[in-house]
Length: 434
Image (cartoon, rainbow, N blue to C red; front, side, top):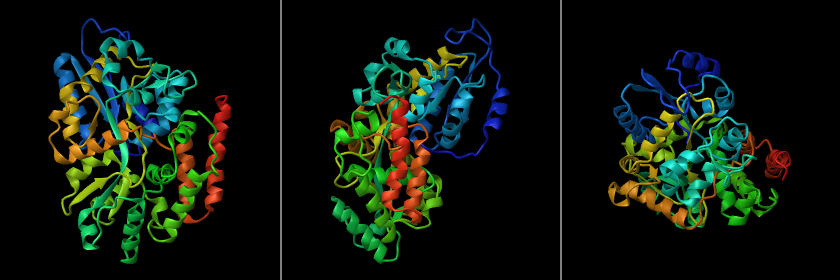
C-alpha cells in the first residue's frame, strides 16, 4: 500500500514519461506490427511480496508478447496519491497503474471519468470468479464514486490488513507474553514505558497513526457503524463512543509515553526502519510490511498477532490495478492484469509474505506466510475487514494526518480533534447528496 519514496515532482514525471515512446494504436486493439511499449506504474518495493510477484509477471508478459517491452516506473505512494488526477488527465497516462482503492481515491477518479470501465474484461476473463464478494467491494464504484456496487474500475490481486508486529527478543527481555486481550496489550506497553522504552513505533506524518486511531475506534464498533462511515448507510456521530474512545485513548497513550511525543513528524518509511533496527518493540501497521520485515530483520526474532480483542480490523483487498481512460495500450494492460491473477503468480506472492486472492492454499509452504494468511482468513470469513479511515471523502487522508498530529503534539483536545475530522466528512456527504 505504501512503499517507495522518491519525491519527484509531477512536472518531472511528465517530462520523464514524455521520453518513453510507444507505437500509436487504437487503445483496445493490438497494433498490426512493430514494437510496442506497455507503461506500468506501481509503488511496491522490489523486495516486497507484490514486487517479487509482479517482477515475475513482467517476465511472463514479455515472454508471451514478442515485440512488446514493459516500461516499469516505480512511484511513491504519496507521489501517485497527490498527482494521479492531473497525470491521468494528460496524454502521459500509463497503460496500467497500481492505485489506492476506496471512495476518496479510485472512486473519485472513476466519477471523474479518468478510469476505464473494466466490466467487459472482468466477465470475459473470469476475474469475478477469482475474487470473493468482500474483495470485490473495492473494485466496483457507482456513478457517485461510492464503492461496493456499479461498474468494475479496478482489479485487486492481493489482500491486506492491519496487525501488530512485535520484537520477540524485547518482549522476552521484559518477561512479557504475547497479549491475547486488550488489557494485556495495554499492560505490555506499560511495562515497556516503565522500563524507559517507548513501546509503539508511530509515523504521525503519514497513514500509520490514523490507522492506529481507527483500530481504537473499531474496538468499540460494530459492523453498522463501519457501513455508516464507509458506505454512507447511516449517520455517524463523531462524538459517539467509537471515535470518542479512540481520540481519548490515543491522547492518553501519548501522556503515558506509549507513543513518542516526537512521532508527529515521522513518516511511515522511517517508522518501519526504526522497527527493523530494533528501536521499538511494537509496530501496528499493515501486512504490506510483512515481506520486507522477513527480508531485512536479521538481528532479532519477530512475530505478529491480530489486534487483541477486536472483531474488526482495518483491511480490505489490496490496492487495485486500474487502466486509465487515456491509456494507449489497453489490450496489453488487460493481458498483464490477467497474468498477475494466474495461480503460479499468486502462489509466489503468498510464499513471499503477501496475501494472495487466488492462490492454491496447499502451495503456500512458508510458515510465517501461512500464519499471516490464516489471520487474514479469520478476519475475512468473520466479516472483520473494516476498510481504511481515509476512504470516506476526497482529501480525508490529510484531514486525519492533521488530526492525529494534533493529538500527538497536544495542540488540540480530543474533543476538538473530533470536530476537526467531522467537518470535512459531513461536507462530503452533502456534496454527494447524502
